[in-house]
Image 1 (tube, rainbow, N blue to C red):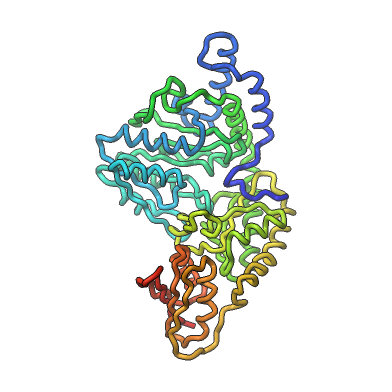
Image 2 (image 1 turned 90 degrees about the vertical axis):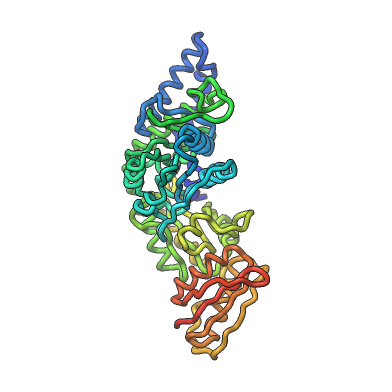
Amino acid sequence: MPYFDAASAAPLHPVARQALLAALDEGWADPARLYREGRRARLLLDAAREAAAEAVGCRPDELVFTSSGTTAVHAGIAGALSGRRRVGRHLALSAVEHSSVLHSAAAHEAAGGSFTEVPVDRTGAVDPAVYGGALRADTALACLQSANHEVGTEQPVAEVAARCADAGVPLLVDAAQSLGWGPVPAGWSLLTASAHKWGGPAGVGLLAVRKGVRYAPQGPAGERESGRAAGFENLPAIVAAAASLRAVRSEAATESGRLRALVDRIRTVVAERVPDVEVVGDPERRLPHLVTFSCLYVDGETLLHELDRREFSVSSGSSCTSSTLVPSHVLKAMGVLSEGNVRVSLPPGTAGADVDRFLEVLPGVVGEVRERFGAPVSAPHSPGPAASPVVDALGRRCPIPVIELAKVIGEVAVGATVTVLADDEAARLDIPAWCEMRGQEYVGEEPADRGSAYVVRRLS
């Protein structure tokens, strides 16, 4: 069964498995003790730290291991904000950061701080000049991911780091998605990552803090990991994480080129074979293994279930697959279609034959789901009478509001409008995206007794 969700968790690398088993026998003792077993464990921990630091591009004494990438993010942000509290309590971050960064920002605001979300373009990238403009005299910390976890777009880390340096603001880079593929550009002050993203075991994160960065660990202080990560080190998992990071880095040059070619094929063929699809993310400046596309008139949860029935494991940023029913904050910030969203992220070793079979199966699956929802086969182009109908889609989830809009738009005269009443949060993103894809004019959103009224003008 092809597994195409490496961006969530990569399969355990064979080197990680071997190292984990070996460390279970040799690294069970307390590395803080002076007896023989403790010294042996300490040597394993020091070697793992040196290997991880070499991959990150920092000194071993600048890096600590945490219990997860999320813990590393929370600790890094909290410690840097506390260490620079005399400068101010303002935090800058991009609008497409991982939820762990957004949760830290929300907690900081609840405690009396403030933060600014820097917008992104339709590819998901920040403009370094715009990011620089968000830095203030009281900015204590800036955050920018190295590459996006949902669409794969790589951020201009070096350019933003230069703006931060000019402003005297440390930059924290979340490198969870990219570290296995190569080092992060220079200029960062703090860096976080998570081992399960590159084929290491879950439950191991990295936090690197450059010397000279003002940093005050938060929470009860501990004696381990320089006081920056509480609790007994999971030494076998740490050893496996460092070993797998070194292994995937040695394979990255060859494997990234091979997977990039497969992803290029997916980007091209999906656009050719699936009508009404939007392939999102930067086509060039991106991770080699990840591609995301959204399909009009498709329920994301149903689409993922149907692909799973055909033995393809993929992910989605669609609100239809979320318990909160809120569209992906990444897709929302980009202003792209969220309904019927599919994220394909290929693990190392993915066979080209599996990708070819996916591309053969996908068009039929999308067609079946659209037929089930009563979606229009193609965009209507009849002249239509001069009318301004109101489509009542209240209480109906995506993709129904857009499907009903597509059915009605051909019944109005060119220049006339259609109003869609909807209370599904996804409609706020998907109706404007539909207009851009279909060449119609999105007039805007108006208040309504329930939900919102979305007004669309027919142009063709």
